[in-house]
Picture 1 (cartoon, rainbow, N blue to C red):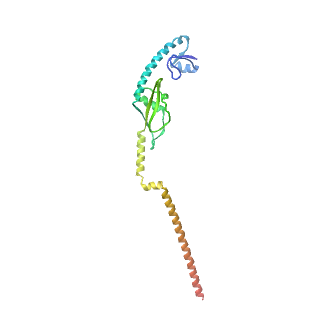
Picture 2: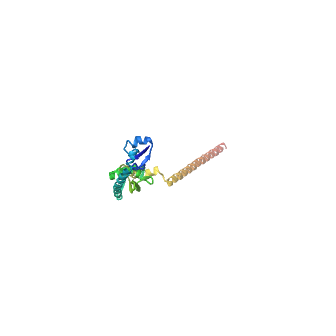
Picture 3: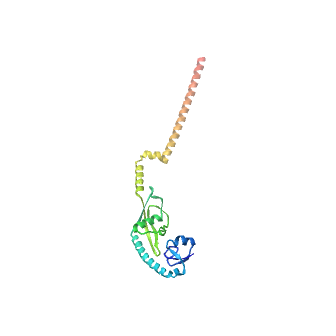
Length: 221
């Protein structure tokens, strides 16, 4: 079905564009939402005027968004996240999270699809993320990823618990190589001592038996 777009529908079309679309898409979405009308001869006469009006709106919109982009240059977008003791996130920062925060800062709706994260953000720190607000208006956002209050408190408690562990407990839980080696040498020495003692006992019993035999022989004589 051929339709005339009455409003911009990025990235599909601009106001004043005439395009062929699926019948269901036109009847169930575009026309009921007031985004397009069927491209009849009467409606097509409006196309040129619509394009001019849309272009004027885009210029005003671009100017407004450029002011937003300029203001964000001097600000950091703070994202509070849950982290472990090493600063690694439970998950990653998403474009939805950044868009929501920027919307809160600017009081304007930000399309998450315009937030272009170049690589996964999985640790705390500062990151530069390009953003595209509208056609012709872009910005580089400085994203500051920090641990949230719950993570800070939990990690503090873990550090305190580790500090309270005694040195003896640490040795039991995690013996060093020297400790293991010393214990092995002690076992070997203990085994050698036991063997020597048993040998002396056996020799003593043999000597006692020989003495008893000699006594018996003398008595018989």
